[in-house]
Every structure is written in structure tokens, then in C-alpha cells.
Amino acid sequence: MNEPATHTIVVMGTIVTIQTASSDPKHSRQQDSAIERALAWFHHIEERCTRFNPQSEAMRLSNQSGVSLPVSPVLYEAVGFALEVAKASDGAFDPTLGLAMERLGFDREYSTGQTVHTDIEPTSAVSYRDVLLDPIRKTITLLRPLVLDLGAVAKGLAVDMAARELREFESFAINAGGDLYLGGCNPKGEPWTIGIRHPRHEDALIDSVVLSNRAVCTSGDYERTADDGKVHHILDPRTNAPEKSAASVTVIAQSTMLADALATAAFVLGPERGIPLLDRMGVDGLIVTPSLDRYETRGMSRDYRPGASPVL
Ligand code: ADP
Ligand code: MG
Image 1 (cartoon, protein in one colour):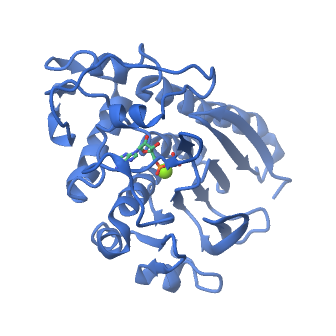
Image 2 (cartoon, protein in one colour):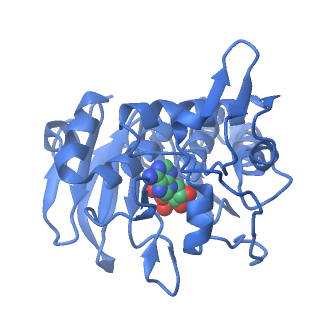
């Protein structure tokens, strides 16, 4: 393999890095254009799904509750998937928390630093049950005034679309601020070893996993905060307050969107209900509590620890 090439952009409020290595230098032009297409997905999905731009498709939808609107394939996919995870987690995951997030202080667009203030007034408590999809017409209807927040699925979806562009190159790594997809092998020709950050020590790892052709996503309470660091960014939809039963959750799955969303859902559920959710959804994961107790699915040590033979 050649020296790995690394491409980095800032998008979706995070740093996205793609690392590839072509086995044949003649393919480098194809590789460059595949990487360009891969990175373009992040902008494409952000433009449609963000709640920080009143002109985004998600916000235009939020401004027209009660109307069935035809939407783009990516918005339909993101919302449809978020609703499935909401049902599977019995509402612990909920993509209608936009206003609650804004009120907690998550109201700043990362690239301009400008604050957004939505004048959508909820008539009563809202939930994922207020979002209806029509799979034939590909429309979305919001039954009440609410603001969609797709922060827990959009990055995962973008990583999956990017990975699809890079599939023809056996080996690549995509890292979107802690949401990763690892294709093939690392530059040494071995499965990828990925460190999991210690939730209380920025420069330390609490664990590591070895994997290939899998996504690994971590949601941590250290990741984004508001109100001078007093509140973090994963809410319990029952109270609209930051959830406290986990410090970080790491999920390994075949799709990044699934790993991304289930890490958030298991974070809200905490170890007692979160690990059974991961088992039911057929994925593996590790939950670290604020007192640094660790809970994990059985497959975690069997399939993904250094020394285990990775599942392909
Ligand atoms: P990160 O953005 O650090 O990868 P997550 O993937 O865990 O973190 O997503 C957290 C984001 O998901 C929040 O910033 C918010 O936009 C949204 N969110 C917060 N709480 C919930 C929840 N209970 N259900 C669904 N989405 C949530
Ligand atoms: Mg995530």
C-alpha cells in the first residue's frame, strides 16, 4: 500500500477526516474524485437537515406544521430512520427535541457563531409520534409545531454515504468527530485498531477495539456543552434535561447511522436498559457510567478486542 492520504474538512460542527491509500498510483485521480464526492455528502446532508439555518429543508418543514411536504431523499431517510430508533427505544431517542435543545442553549451555528432563535411555539409537549411519513408520496407531516433535531443521525448518514463512494478502494477510514467507519485494513494491512476516549481524561483511552468494515460511534457527555459547560447535549425526552446515567456510549454496527443513533439512545437509557436495547438491535457496545463502571454486550470482548479475530 502507498502512504495514506488524508483529507480534512470542517462540517456539521465537527472535523471530518478521510484517510485512503490506493494500491496503484494510476488510480489516484479516481481516488481524489471519489474523496471529493464523499466529502460533498457531508455538506449536502448538513444543508438539508440542519436546524441552524431557517432556510434548510428541515426548518422549512418545521415552519409548516399540519402540511404534508414532499422532501428530499436524504431528509426522508434521516427522519424515517430516527423514527424507527425512537420506536425501538420506546421514545428515549426522539428527533423532535429541537426547541428543547435551543432553550438549553444549543442555539449557535458553529461556522458563523450566530445564535438562532426559532419563533415556533409548541402548543403542547411534542414527541416523535407527532411526525408522520408517507412512504408512497415521500412526504413528511408534522402534526404540531415542533423543531426537528437530526443531530444524532445526520452525521452517521453522511459517513455511510461517504463510505459508499469509497467502497471501490479496499481500505479507508472516515472519522466525523467520533463517528467512524473503517473499510478494509489499516496501512500496515491489519484490521483497524480504534481507541475509545476516556470520558473524564481528554488525553487518555479507556479501551480500544479492533475492527474491519464496521462503524464505531461514541456519544459522550464531554462532547458538546452549553451554559458555560453546565449542560451537555444528550437529553432525556421525558424531562428535556441532560441525561446523567452514562458518561459515554460506544456502539459498533454495520451502518454508521445505526451506530450513531443507538449510541445516543443507549446513552439516554443507561446501562440497565441500554445494553438490552443494543442486544435487541443486533449491535455491540460499551457503556461507561459517570462513576466509570463499564457495561458491555457479550460480542464486544468476543469479537472486537485486540487479539480477537475480527468479524468481517
Ligand atoms: P455527537 O453529536 O457528539 O456525535 P450524538 O450522536 O450523541 O453526539 O448526538 C447528540 C445530538 O443528538 C445532540 O446534539 C442533539 O442534536 C440530538 N439529541 C440529544 N438528545 C437526543 C435524544 N434523546 N434523542 C435524539 N436526539 C437527541
Ligand atoms: Mg453520534
